[in-house]
Amino acid sequence: MTRIYVDADACPVKDEVYRVANRYELPVSVVANARLRVPTHPRIEAVMVTGHFDAADDWIVERIGPRDIAVTSDIPLASRCLAKGARVLDPKGRVFTDESIGDAMATREIMAFMRDMGTMTGGPAPYAPRDRSRFLQHLDDLIRACLKP
Image (tube, rainbow, N blue to C red; front, side, top):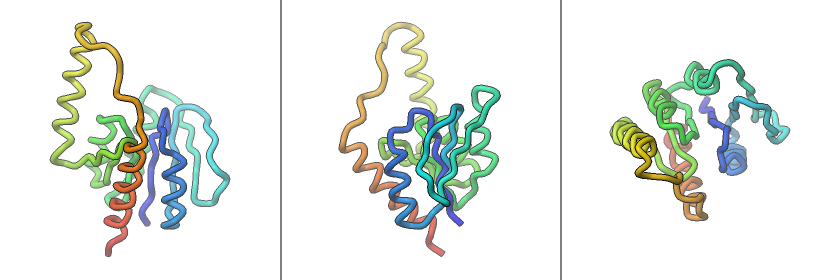
């Protein structure tokens, strides 16, 4: 059965994931490094993972499979999930694929270098309503693709 794994630390679309997953009757694992509140529902599980910095990422990667979906803005985690055959979506609605993940990793490295050099300050653009809309559309598309026989 398809499961949605949410890298929950600072994820702005958890409520949207719950709503869409409920419509398709899919289980959701909400994984974080700290305790968090999730709706009381038999298909939603909150997983608090402690230990090293990437413990939540490791927990997801250990369990995710080819018919599953990961929701994360963490590009290295996205790459690891893709390597396991899963589908990956970021909270702004960008679908990561085997073809696009290399560019995303390279851009991440360039941006980190520029921040370290002081030539770039600030972070990503603020979350906008169109991001939420794009996320919902792509999540629906990915779920339907996973559910095809």
